Amino acid sequence: MNKIENLPLIDPHIHMISRTTDDYERMAKAGIVAVIEPSFWLGQPRTSVGSFKDYYNTLIGWERFRASQFGIKHYCTIGLNSKEANNEELAEEVMELLPRYIYKEGVVGIGEIGYDDQTPAEDKYFRMQLDLAKEAGLPVQVHTPHRDKTRGTHTSMQVCLEHNLDPGLVVIDHNNEETVQEVLDKGFWAAFTIYPRTKMGNERMVEVVRKFGSDRIIVDSSADWGVSDPMAVPKTAALMLERGIPMEDVRKVCYENAIAAYGQSGQFNPQDWENRSAIDQRTLYQENSVLRGQAPKVEIENPSV
Ligand SMILES: [Zn+2]
Image (spheres, rainbow, N blue to C red):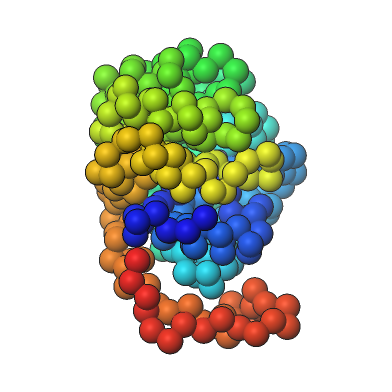
C-alpha cells in the first residue's frame, strides 16, 4: 500500500517494540511519518521494577533509533499500565521511577493508564498518575477497559475531572459508537483503535467520522504482540477517502488531531519529521544496528513528506 495522495499519517498508539522491521518499512511506505508508543504490559506480568526500567529505556532509546532507521519519528508515553497496577508492592516502586522518565526527550505524555478490571488498586494508581501528569503539564493517554466499556469510560473521565485535569489534555482511547458522544461532549479527545476482525473495524470507523465529524477524533492501531494491524491507520484513511469522507477530515483524524493533542507536550512538532535526518542504516546505537549483514540503506538527502 503506497502513500495516499501525499497524505502524511500518524499512528498515535502502537507498540512497536513487539513489531518487526518489515512493519516499519510498510508503515513508512504508506505515509506514516510518526508514531507514539504507549507504555504497556508484556502479555505477562513483570516481576521486578528493573523490568520496567529496562522497558522505559528501550522506548526512549533503542526503539527510537530503530524507527529512525526506517524514516519514522518515534515518541512514547510513560506510565504504569492498569493490569500491573494490581501488584501494589511493585506499583509503588514504579511510581517512584516515573518522574525520572516523563521529562525525557521523546516522551509526549503519561500513558497508557486507566482501568482494566476497574479494581481499587487500578483506581489508586490511575489517580496518582493523573496528579503526576497535572504537575508535569503533560497530556494523558487513557486506556479504557474492554469489559464493561461504557461504565469504565464514564468513570475514567469523571476521575480526570475530579483531579481537575483539562479534558483538552486527555486522550480517551478505545472508543466505540456507544462511548464517543459523551467523550466529545465532555471536551476530551476521542481515540479509536482499529482492530482487525473484532471490535472497532475500519468500516465502522468511516461511519463514526461521517456521523460525528472529525473534531477531536483520532484513529490508531494499538498494534502489539496480539492479533492486530500496524497498517490500520493507512487502511482506514484510504477507506475513508474511497467512501467519500473529505480529505480535510481524513487528514484531521489520521494526522492533525494527534499533533494538536500530543503537541501540548512541547515535543511533538511536524518540523521534527519534516526535517528529520536522512536514513543512514550504517548508524549504530550502542554499537548495534538493525542490519544482519544486509546492505545498509542510505538516503542521499532528506526526502520531504
Ligand atoms: Zn496499547
